Length: 233
Image (cartoon, rainbow, N blue to C red; front, side, top):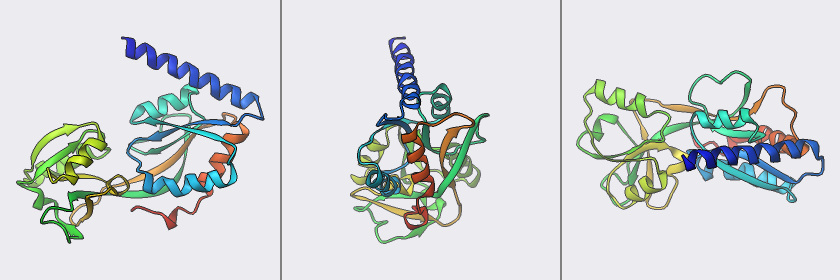
């Protein structure tokens, strides 16, 4: 109950700050949502480009995932958010697709898979599979494995990508995830040969809602960035 109330209060605070930023043209703070599964290697170059033209802006990125990202945006907590689209956009939310990103297999550089650039899903049968609970394709991937008779040894499951990636790097199993979060020391990314799981990365705003000057600068910079140079797909 306390956690729920704390979240309500945080949303109110963020919404108040966002409203103040719209009313104050000299505001230099920007709150934005960022999907927790969008890895730094994919996003960092665009954020560096924004910092180069807005060094005076204090940008605060809040970790969001799933429907909560859209709920917080619509509530006024954020001016905008960068998300991995999971389904149809909610009403009143508009999106600019920035790039796309494919899911790949993550394995330890210590394992015998080192040197492989691609493999088939069926090769995961019998492998220890570290299940990412925060995965947009978790159900489709599980469904395909079941349909094809692919039987990895699933243990453990976790919402924490940091924990999963550490376990992968230590050689405790393999996982499937977006390339940008698998770009971490000790982990190698291996393309999936027999299936394609691709997600759009969107910049979302609320249709018809006025943006503060600093939010408009951010949206224009991120939407106009040359994402083809840094695509993690």
